[in-house]
Amino acid sequence: SQTIHQWPATLVQPVGSPLSLECTVEGTSNPNLYWYRQAAGRGLQLLFYSVGIGQISSEVPQNLSASRPQDRQFILSSKKLLLSDSGFYLCAWSVPSGGGETQYFGPGTRLLVL
Amino acid sequence: SQKIEQNSEALNIQEGKTATLTCNYTNYSPAYLQWYRQDPGRGPVFLLLIRENEKEKRKERLKVTFDTTLKQSLFHITASQPADSATYLCASSGGSYIPTFGRGTSLIVHP
Image 1 (cartoon, rainbow over the protein chains, first blue to last red):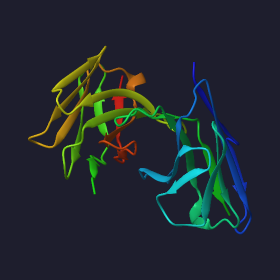
Image 2 (image 1 turned 120 degrees about the vertical axis):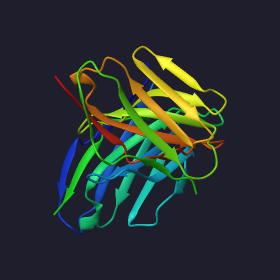
Image 3 (image 1 turned 45 degrees about the horizontal axis):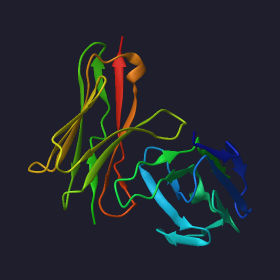
């Protein structure tokens, strides 16, 4: 069966510090991968998605970046965190099927920037 | 662009009653509508998908409808239980793999 891992579960970082969040998927090949952010009381904001190794599409211009160095690994990074980067970060995967794909979410990382 | 609207106010109901949550879309009729459950501090979990040409879909105590005239999907939980308390997200998707999520509606089932 497929599983998705995210780490760390929680993170407290000072403003201006770098960030690296990692997501890995097991039990599937060539998944579409996604990074979302969910602020308190807000909806899911799609940040990045990837349809293959090295292929990254950005939905929202900001100080975050994403990389997909391996088929089932998706990394979210920042060189300098802002207060506004605080939130709940979710990684998700789906099986490419031409539309209507179910998204499977990881457990999330709670990031607090102070 | 497509917008998904869900009631921001929490829905409070008594155990055993049917909970009905609403999802409205603003523009074109999406090919698919999906419903997810999200518990506090957890990632959303997929529940049901309904296609544009389907009027109703059922799974155990869950039922989803798709009304293209009203531009609306309804999500029903029959014989609700306190364990059903969570936030329920609606998402639309068309020919691409990028869904549009609503903000979700919180359901609170009182014993």
